[in-house]
Image (cartoon, rainbow, N blue to C red; front, side, top):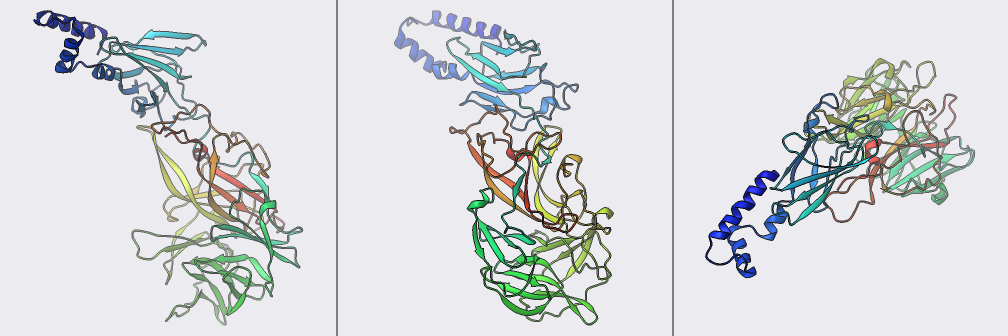
Length: 519
């Protein structure tokens, strides 16, 4: 309600009061009258509520600017857009559109482009442009001019690319491996991360429930394999650990420390499917599909000529509404004649099917694949949706060089494409093959400045992925957010271009996950 209408309403109240026989000057009578007519202190105060807020359309600033959604927190007296606008959005000359419950006056206080504090009355019929480069104070006066309420309006704009896989400061740490490591692999089981490593004579397992902790805090145990394991083939199922020996023997362990020979001889382990391990075994005519434990009635089928027999990504399994059984996916690797392939194969627990191809330059040995997320922004109202996404990176080309490319699939491996430039490996990061990637939720702290054992290395044009955005506002919750879960990507070890073990861990995250949530 504008001021003119408010004044006429108050004038009408005065005339009504004069026509009543009982005097309106009596406090008791006045309270009764207010209750009868609905003009109570409570209703008057409610007229200070901001009931709607948006920005006027301006395509020169941002497409569909008027559709950006703003949260109105009446209790906290804050108004903000939880999904920040794209980086570079100019918010210095925006037109606010404010709706109230029948106020008499709305005053705006803001800092203009020149840094001067300005205060002016809001005109609903022809509002002026104001700067939202810093928070704006809005004071709403009630209909009877007896109450006021002041809000803080913040227009949030990303200061960095929010949806990029950014490897930034604190991205490197030493692999928790034995000194003089010559082979290593890292797996996750039972809520712990286990790093197996050897110097060629002794095998060790280092374990922790917190992969971000100092490597000195990892629990270390010697492992008496009793054979020479190919650590890069180690796989963990729902129940047990499995690994191939250098002679192809498949060994099993229930605790990862004491091992027994299964009696099987395999060429490669693709990964785990429920409580079974799935791989490929040589026979006199070539190769056959293999699984262990062997289900009743299982008959080993011959591997087709275009099926990979080694060097594939580790199997990723997922549940699907279109299938009663989980689906397993592998990609890349080499076929029996040694040629590399970019094919993607699926496994349903009984049979294999080739259902897709990655780009031709993804014909690689020993890529790493992991499930993660990307974000899709609706440019009509600038809201953001999280999407499950498969990432694939690293790997060795036919000429022995390593790939720097990162690929993504947003439909569980059916279609793949090169990730955008901000998701590619930065120039300062060494390439790798045969690494293991684990996605582990860890607590992100709003004011945590400790980097622990993680080495600070500033990478290319992006700010540090671990950096917090200051000045964000909490929403309706009373207690502010001080910590939240952030899904870190840990890439352990792998080999360099010379085939040597990389004694480091990489850590990264999609930038958006590092932002303190707005409650």
